Image 1 (cartoon, rainbow, N blue to C red):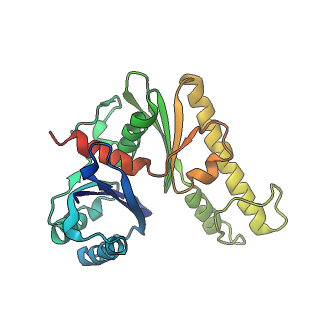
Image 2: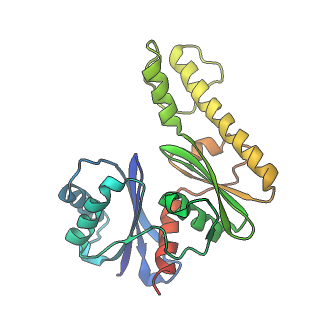
Length: 261
């Protein structure tokens, strides 16, 4: 079996996915895992964690034939480069400026575009066509726009829901740190419920407010959501049409294939 290991490195989590390349260009995602991102972990710590996850699915390290990485955490790049070579004996393909994407990057400085945003746009186009609005609920929530000419136009970046909750805890001395969850009722009957309701529905309102303005400019755009909180938020959104939890991993597979000559 010839496998592709796709790695999406975010500020909060590292998501890994395994694709079976023997199945052709539409290689299926066999399994995926989510690890906490840590800038302090060593090559060996990442390596042993990954091997344990693979063996849990009866996958051996030598079956990993290719490896592709997108990352928004530059301090981890040398660690991940070493991890790929030491534990899988492969040099990773990095998502970076200059690779083939099938998109025209129509922003002021294409080099500053986050790899995750590019990957989401490519995967969204593959599944839902153009024009497209891709929303990623991560550490930050990003909105990315591609027009009908397949031009990546840019987007919006807002603080993620967990960042907002943490800021409220840090700056208001009498408010506790709370779990981010869908509230049982709109009107909270205690402080925790009031915070959960305010954060959650306030965030849904923010997301739909931005999407309403974007749909005014791009009324035929498909709206797809991904990221940890996508499914919960999408249930209450007027504009999110598709939920794709593995959108970023699929984008990594697509971009790896586009760049194999």
